[in-house]
Length: 428
Image (cartoon, rainbow, N blue to C red; front, top):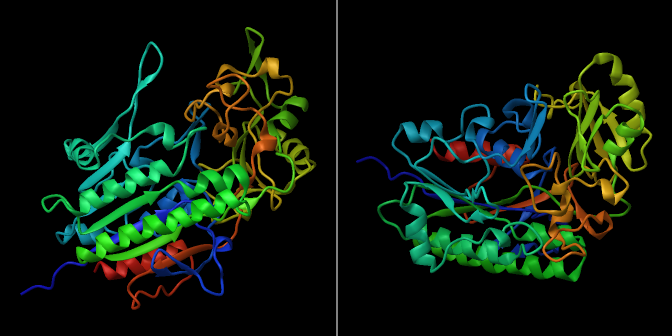
């Protein structure tokens, strides 16, 4: 008789940094946590891709939460196609042997070669607004989960000024519902808790509201642990990045490039849009890291000097100097912020020049991550453009945290990739 297949629940917690724990007694949700070496870049999509592949961004290609498509001259953020993550998955052999795998709310899961997935996929209406929806495999999974939870998933709780623990609350309930589905529940189930990111980023990890979000994380972990253990699952929890308190103003690399004549602007009804077809240099920003895309080698040195002179920039690298990020998707230059500093995408200083998307939650059209989307602006239902409101940042480093309810699970190598390799061994 063959041995039963291993059963694992993998919980990825956004912003679960080691700095949030009482390191003398690092307990949370019934788990005893330990420090985990930081991954660079410390960003959601690269971290999740590294866990899925056991490789760094230089190998799997997710060098940020968005990718700049040189053939289109356009950055695209938060695209969900699994094909963006290059390389085999740590569970490929497990599935070939009959094991099953599911993903709930992981990035780049659409089209992934797994047995089950659930991922937000709203329908944007031609007339404006959207239809809230989640894509799923099998097709009926989302409706079955909604029936169990008692309501659908609300995207306004997932990102934007109304983002809150309610997003994680729904995902926790959905995960518990899937664990109860005898006909669908996979052997390995990966799920995601996003809420800790919101208030650690709004206010900084030292703020009391961040502490409340951390305590809420403990409640959710406890619920998931009990549900998983009741079904015979081992549980692995890990954080993707550590949030740091902001210690100075945001850095605006595209303003610098525009002033130097390297970033061209096209005026449309007095609004300034970047002309990326003719731009000599453009910075795709993502928290504490910025990728600078430069069309012609002769503009490399001027771009580097321009950026290196900016207050708050730690260093400007060539990709080959950062092997963990060195991939064709990376920029010709990579700028890293000093601790407590972060990059903002705007290229304008006069608010009258702000593009239409600047005042809206528009994660796909903005050519860089915008932390200001977590705040309301002065006009009702518009988002802020005031970067001074942002209290936390991440991306360039800082230990995260991990825990497992199986004392025999001991990764040989530190870091997220080490966890992935250890899990792969468990699935053999």
